[in-house]
Image (cartoon, rainbow, N blue to C red; front, top):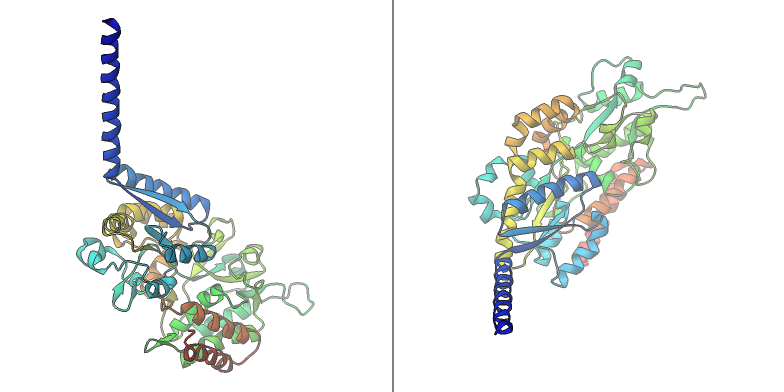
Length: 423
């Protein structure tokens, strides 16, 4: 009888354990597990982002975000497109907003305006961010962060050149660049230049030229079609060529215009870049000035956006909860202070914590104030080809081709691709 009693006790324990496992399994089935692919760099920023993702997971028992570093964004494109075509896409994707048009053509992303129009968070988003969120009357993404381009300058070199007022116009910038260009050893060749120019035809060159196009009141898209040849584009390219002809600029290494070595070593006194640069952490005596204006003050927005991929209604709705968290004052304040990017939430930018942060890093204030004049690069479906053609025109101009000639040549390439239905 003893063995029978022992058997019954063990059987009860087994059944209880089995029931407990089923309960856990059923509970786990109620949790929506979402995959998020991103390319956040440097690793320290990934750590900050993961910490905030963990906080979301801890406070949302019904949703769990699996955040995966999928590599550099330019390396991700084949992987992302293959995943979309194979119906193996993540639930949420972090990417440059300039890919929006391509995603829309593929039917890969979920439109966000119905959700965002009903959410109080919409009124908290900095208005200029919407230019990179929207296409054809729909909102397709939300920004994780923002930034823009300014001019970093060496205060010590400005002082040595006797420059006491910062340039506010293109012509003033041109004159300042001349004064900062110095032959130190008497060999009739400059050892120090006024400004670093980003040599190349890649996106960095296009990106850092864009503030000058926008300051001239220009655009690349007219009547939903790309148009490189405009008086504004010609004027912006002519200004870059004038700086080069003055002999007051130093070319970067090809396609390496973002590198800071020349600035940090004092070989150039000014450089076009944004708050993400290593210069912010260096010991160089630097500051930042807004992009000098032609017709109007302007710079270009640098955002990284989150897309909700088309999956299932349940997964899409769960993804929207995470997006609302990302846009919140709490997230944006902690993320911006930790990462060095600008907050996209107005309340975050005005918060005591962020204001105390920019008091310690006054250069950030320039970028924050420039948000109100930050324009966007196009997010049309053929942006990559527009950018490639524009980049080739900019590079040709920097090497001596007249701006109008270069723009007309590469506009013709765009027109040819469009007429052949390959645009």
